[in-house]
Amino acid sequence: MPAALRFRHAPHLRAARRLAILAGAVLSGHAAESPVVSIAAGPHERVQTLVGVTLPADLARGPWTLIADDGQRLAMQVDDQHHGFVRILHLAAGATLTGHLAGVATAAPTVIWQRAGDVLAAHAGAQRLLRYIGGAGTLPAGVQEVYQRGGYLTDVITAAGVPVTDDYPPNHLHHHGIWMAWAKTGFAGRKPDFWNMGERTGTVQALAIDGTWDGPWCAGFHARHRYLDLGVTPAVAALEERWDVMVSAPVADAPPAIDLTATQSCSGAQPLVLTPFHYGGLGLRGNRAWNAPDGTARFLTSAGKDRANGDETRARWCWMGGEVDGRTVGMVVCDHPANPRHPTPLRLNPKEPFLACAPSQLGEWSIQPSTPLVLRYRIIAWDGAPDPARFDRLWDDFAEPPTATVAVPSPGK
Image 1 (cartoon, rainbow, N blue to C red):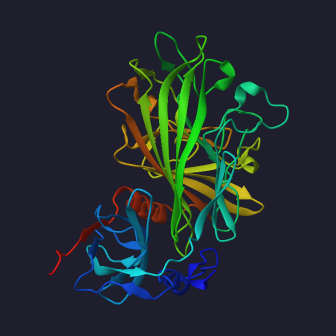
Image 2 (cartoon, one colour):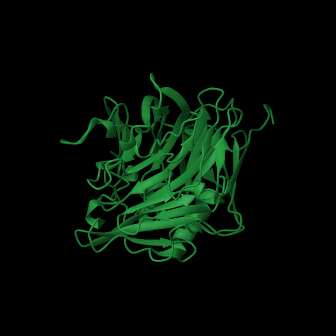
Image 3 (tube, helix red, strand yellow):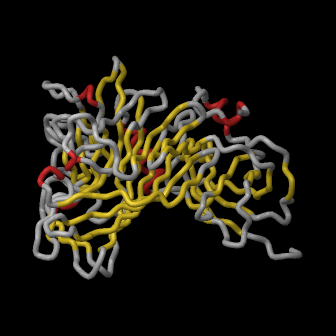
């Protein structure tokens, strides 16, 4: 693998700059005829920011290099939905980077998926980043079948190689690394609980992995899940859920990140009523080392709240972490401003390493047959102590990203 594409061993900005240069000679395209890209930083300074670029439908998939007017040559990858991604090293607030696209020789993807049955594992070079458990999942020995499910992320690992999630913790067998389910609900006159599976009123099935994509900066997949009401025989589908997931590899000054977009649609003509409750929605379960009687898990929110005073408060982001083998690590979940009831209400468990983005805390609401519910989150695997200023910048990159435009010159001009 070319040194320019090894993410794990990029210890400083000079190495990160090498990452931005895609190996291979320019095969086609001249500045006067090539698509012109403009990236505006907006009100925030950008450092090692992965920028999404909506490409014209008739533009070839590439791969491309963005040759900036200042001489930078930045690799651009394109996903399976024709969205481009380019990582900019630095852009001052209010500044704009411009350049043109040039075709390049194909380079082997660096962030890839390895599939074994219904399980996907994301790798950046030799380092695994996470796993997605599809299908029925695998029960640990001695666990009742009622708790079996797939459709979640686990084995989330920091850039330093430290795991920050758990799966099937003994004191909450329905918890997983990063998962989604609704707790107290109303459906067709019944009250299925898709979160507390031990009550046998609801469950979530992982139906299919619909596709994957990979590249030098990030990789993604699409999956479908179904929420089943178990209160009748046979069970009835209440909700269809689509996950669009992107994981980006770590580089200098940019930790590994997971972008999760969940789209939930009613399975039929019945709405799903979400009744007030203090958890349900997106859940994150931290490393089992933090599950100690003295409550070694720590929390910090964008509002400055912690475990003692942050439960059932609202925040743009929340960090959960602790020590693993003497190292402080954690996860940061960022709530997108387009999500209903943003900034998200939080459940910070007082005794266990668990947090939830729980919009039902604010009162009853519903998912209607005519209107799918879309929820977007970014989860960052973090090495070191919490850094609120960095977390603010990472949230800015997610919630208020740079804007990118592409102009394709007309033929002959």
